Image (cartoon, rainbow, N blue to C red; front, side, top):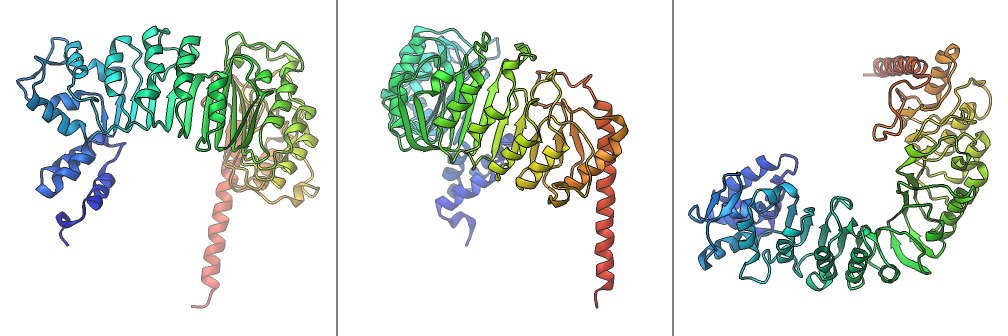
Length: 522
């Protein structure tokens, strides 16, 4: 069968395969060339070509040259209002658009006059088949254009991505309050802007209460009524919101994949009245320049609240403090101990635990053993690794062995420990199955004696045969600088030894393989 005789659906699949978001310009050029090849290709190729658009420049460039122009500032402009035939040309392409992305720069490509023409479109909506709209522009002047885009066809809506990029405004609040009426079928909604003012928060909450098919929502502050509504939605899978105070008793019965809560202070009071019957992942972010630990029991109460408000099938638990660098790292209230960890041991489905923003100097071998036995499915564990804590760790190499022995799925570890020597014939070292998944470990805050560098490398290689990298800082974390870290020289030597040991092991494996081939009968 000739390709031109294939059904439209198959042709669309072919063009979808050709499209490459990484090499977007080249792949779009290929699809455009196919659109000109033959009549049968034209419509499906154009549908694919116009499916995802950045800004309004492509639409304006499709208009006749006599209508459009370029300003002295290099912006596209329209010399006069569009007539019916020109609107037909515009709509022939606009109706194909499913996703529109608007950042600051794409709107800078058109001038005010072009914007006024677009807002005056004779059709009820500018893009009648739009499904996904991402609008990150903060300027109130551009809001009429945003209003012209809002339609009942939209399923995914992302607005004002940067919560601190602009000041609260009455115009934005008015638009936010009308979202549900304009876009009644929203399934994915992102609008962190509502954290800026009570007015914005109430406007967003008003719209949220009208959406019954939400699957994912990332908002700023939501009021109690909105949270109660979200708790009743069986479709909801992802919830990300900010809370600044008490939440009325709310129980989420839907099977959530992830919950993320941001608060400007320790959110013990936030969690006391909210329950999640089923949740796979929870991220608690403390994000406030004036965040303080007012009571020594703040952290223990936080841990207890987490253990009581989330279901036992929780797979990921993370607590983040974004302003950790402003704390006094010697403050004992930031220190985790075994009593604080115990309430979390009942979560035996955990795969990721991130408590890296707390000091783990009091976590010893016995506590780690208890954690490892309680969390056999653990894949990532981060404790006390976000800052250069002044107190040395209590954990030793034995604690690391407990982790490897009981958590066979581990592939990433960041826990401060004291590098020490142990008897290779002693338990649990001699009874532990090596972990071949781990290729690097973080050694920030890990003391090591220069005299035992080679022996430590041998122990690590026995336990982690593919380990080759000693990382002294998180690449995504700027709380502490990568230069001038203690024991960097010693751990650098350990890394050199490990590299040599891994190479030797691979050479031996190849030799064994060759010998087996030579000894096998022809």
